[in-house]
Image (cartoon, rainbow, N blue to C red; front, side):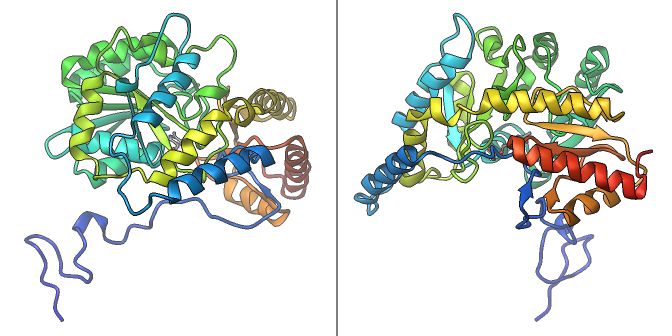
Length: 379
Ligand SMILES: *Cc1c(COP(=O)(O)O)cnc(C)c1O
């Protein structure tokens, strides 16, 4: 069989789009080691009562699996709206028609790029930023432009506004708290970018780690009534202890939800996913019950790392970026050799560790001290 190349592309098999050839699929190593602190999961699983309720909800959904699920997932949208209204700050109510959901917030954001990006359009973010964003842009043929964050990983608002004015993006992607740095955006930054984008662009504030923000740090949900081009995404994967569930969602103007309905696959949210997500939401107080403890562990970890002499980025998330190392890979490998898996990501010389249980954090501290004592890795 021959694979004849498209104009300008060498022939190859399979006949993949030229820009996808040779690219490794995204993903952190999934290794079965005792201490897994690499993908920002909540270390606490559900209680027996919660497991039983989820199982009963799945069984009920199974009784009608011969039928397609509710394409508009009306009941789930109402439950998510009421959960968000409780986290949105005084006086802000989120209505069900302002909510959209998909299989993880990664799918929500891909749908946003499918609807609002595309050929001839531009998506902008500010590096260091979430490594999946350029992939959504590539997959939807959207031009990708990354500005820079300041030295302390905050946004330089004047530079950000200038970049938006120059590039005229139709989508701006802003993780807050940012992954991999943990930096939350002040409301002023969101306001500035919503105003700079105007009616030509949407501003997506990705609050995957929103529930971990420190006391006094507001959610961008509070700004929804002020900006119709603002989209706030959330997920059940992190604080909600539901990474295996695959449920992400957004809150925005109802017109934005309606636009996504044009590009979504029919019945993209299975009946089982909808039922299980609703059951999990009924257990929100339990599933979110460890968030305060994890925030405490995070703040203690930041303090400990600083006392040890490391550079540490302020964190409003359930992970901490620290460094700097002359050879970060050697430190990452040294920790792994001791059964502690963290993430080799972020700017050169930095490493990212997720916040786990008190026992896991103690194991991390011990392992890090041993690794750096042995090979004197600190730059
Ligand atoms: C983990 C993460 C998500 C969540 O992805 P899901 O698809 O909902 O599991 C989204 N954005 C950022 C920045 C993340 O780190």
